[in-house]
Structure formats: C-alpha cells, structure tokens
Amino acid sequence: MKGLRKSILCLVLSAGVIAPVTSGMIQSPQKCYAYSINQKAYSNTYQEFTNIDQAKAWGNAQYKKYGLSKSEKEAIVSYTKSASEINGKLRQNKGVINGFPSNLIKQVELLDKSFNKMKTPENIMLFRGDDPAYLGTEFQNTLLNSNGTINKTAFEKAKAKFLNKDRLEYGYISTSLMNVSQFAGRPIITKFKVAKGSKAGYIDPISAFAGQLEMLLPRHSTYHIDDMRLSSDGKQIIITATMMGTAINPK
Image (spheres, one colour):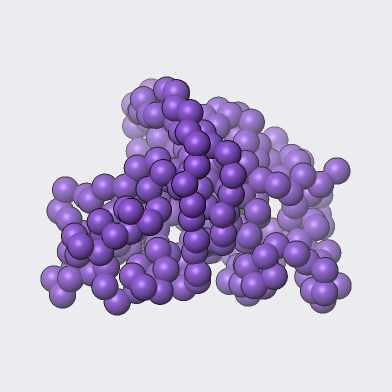
C-alpha cells in the first residue's frame, strides 16, 4: 500500500518492571528508574504509517469498532483536557487510586474499562515526542548542546542507564500514529512497537486536541527499551521500545 511501509524489527521481551515515566503527548519532568533484565529476542513485522490520510482512515475505522458508551467517551474527552493532572496524581501515588476524589476514581475506572474495547488489530508502530526531562532531571540541562545537537557524553550516559531496561508508566501514555509535525522540535522521539491484540485506542475523533492522530495506551504499562541512537543530524535521540502490556485488567 502506497504511503504505508512494513519495517522488520527486533522485539526484545523481558521479565520484571521498574518505575514511572511519561504520559501526555508532550512530557513533563519526573523521576525514572530502571534495572537490568533477562531478554529473549525474536523478529516480527510492524506497520508504520507515512501518509496522514491513510493513518486517519485506519484510525477512524478502528474507532467505529469500539462501541464506547457515552460515559466512556466523556471520560476520554475529559482526560484529553486534563491529562497532566490525572497522570501526575497516578505517578505520585504509584498507580493507586484509593484516596482520590470520587469523581476522579470514577473517571480512571471508566478509562480502564474502555480499553477492554480498544485493541489494535495488527502489529503497529506508534510515536511520541519528549523533552530532556523524559530521561530524568539529571539530563534536563545537560542533554542539549548550545547549537541544539545532542551532547554525546550525556547521550552515552543515558544509554548506559536505560538501554535494554524495562520502564513502568503509572499514568496513561499518549502516542500518535505518525511521527507528526509537533514532534519536530522535540529532542527525543520514541517509537513504540505495539503487538496485535494489545490494548490501545485511537481517540483522535473525540480528543479535545484533535489532529494529533492520538493513540492512547493504558496506565500501568511496561515497555522495554530495545534501541537508542542519534538521528542523522544529531539533534534527536531515537528510542525504539516494545510495549509489554498493562497490569490493569478491569472486568
């Protein structure tokens, strides 16, 4: 299909988890932790959209299949308006919602439940852009050189800390079907490999910020960082990560 290519990629599965990372489409500072794990690698194929019209058509077709209830749609719309607040609370409490205001508990429960209906029908590549704080506060002021390129010493330090590690995100993870224009100025691009049948929902049709081709991933998800490399112009770190799944499975 023109505008759509299939990439042969290496999956790395692992056992174990770590600590919180990100969530809105553009990320705010937070602490992150990682540890080494046992690995098992194998090859698979993922679809990567390069044409915006085809990406929208695919996403809209998926959205029509979900059959979300009115309350589930309202919870998603509300989330897109206040993702930072919701995810901030989830990270602060390590995913535990006991003690949250009753309306927020209800919203989180509805969001979690909606993922029972939102699953990807095929292996697919998703994207998100982040600032240096994604790697932790220690990189916030050291990752970029004055000319906008990635500092190689800081990059090697980040690789030593995160490459071939698992990361656990207590909040929801906003991604896009394409490496869209709003990521152009972001120094970190993560390419998520999401396997067929994984919980992931195309929510752009009802997002408060439509046009980002947004795919939402569930909270308390773990992903494995398979690869970290510099872009050809040296201005971005390209991370490839495999989504491992979520520990949240509501009935």
